[in-house]
Amino acid sequence: MRIIGWRLLQGAGVLALLAGIAGIAVFGPDSRFVSGPHPIETEGSAIVTRPGVIAWKDVQIEVLAEVPGDKPVFVGLGNSVDVMSYVEGTERLEVISFEPPWSVETSAAQGGPALPASPTAMDWWIAGEGGLGGALLQARLPDESVSVAVLSVGDANLRGLTLSTAYGIEGIFARSIGLILLGGAVVMLVHLLLRREPGEDEQVVYVVVEEDGSEREISAEELEALGEVEIIEETEVPPGERR
Image (tube, rainbow, N blue to C red; front, side, top):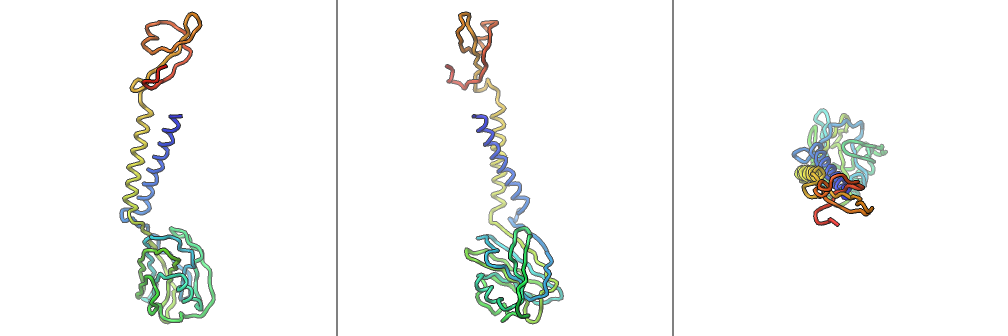
C-alpha cells in the first residue's frame, strides 16, 4: 500500500510537470496566447457575440479587426443588453459559439443595411477603439455578461474582414514555471525513495523453522550464523518494527 501511495504522488508530480510545460508552450513568456488572422465572410456592417458566448472573467483579451482599403472600422466591448439592443435592427453576423483558440459558429440575422447611429457616439461601451483599415480592442473582461462587436462606420461595410485574437492570464508564465519545478522535484524525490537499498533504512527479516517445528524471525546476520536452515518468508521491516 505504501508503494501505491508513492506511485500516486509521483503521478501527481508528472501531471503538474506536464501542466507547467503546456502553460509555457501555449502562453509564452508574455502570458498571452495569440490566434489569427482569420478571414470572416460577411457583406454586412456588424458582427457581434451573443450573450453568454464570452463566459470568462478577469481575462485580458485583444481583438484586432482589419479591413482592406482603409475602410473605417470599430471594435467594442459592452454589456450584452446594450450591444444587442444597438444592433437589433441591423443586418448582422452573430457569433453563437466560440472556443479558443479559434472554433467559431455563426448565424446570420436579418435587418437594415446600416447601424442606427455611429458606434463612436455611444457612451455605454466598456472599451472601444476605431480606426482606418484596422482597430485594436484591449480590455479585461468584467464580472458581467458582455459582448464583443466589430462594426463598420458610416457607409462602409466589413467585406474582406480578418480578425486576430489574443488572451492573457496574468502570471500564468510564472505559475507554469512553478508547476514545472514542483512537479520535477516530486517526481525525482519519489524516484529516489523507491530506489533506496533495503539496508539503508530497513532490515531484511527471515522466518525460519526450528527443529521442533516452531517458526522464528531472524536477521540476515543470524541467518548466516545458523548455516543451512529452511526459509519460509523473507520481508523488509522498517527499523523499530522487529517483532
